[in-house]
Length: 107
Image 1: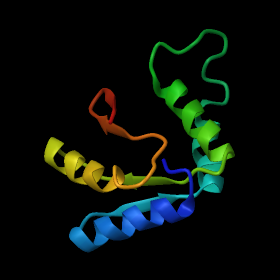
Image 2 (image 1 turned 45 degrees about the vertical axis):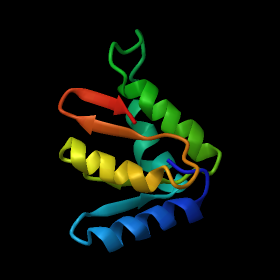
Image 3 (image 1 turned 90 degrees about the horizontal axis):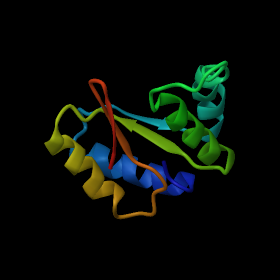
Image 4 (image 1 turned 90 degrees about the vertical axis):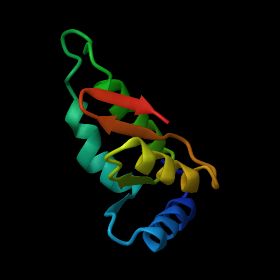
């Protein structure tokens, strides 16, 4: 997640130039709020979830409401995750996570 669209687009462009075969999806705030936020609308009722998915979606929602943009990039291994983060770390970013089998990792 990035505080502004320009940062997200800049990182996406840089990644695309380095590895055009990698799919990169831009998630503007409206998409996050309409597609991701509803996935946990009532998931903690009557009891809070034992997993971190709800908390993650609430964090995305809070950032999207503040105008932050996201990128979704496949990182099948640690090397590709580090490649991604080397580009992300060059601009201000608000949140970076990697989804792996049964794990959500903060980057």
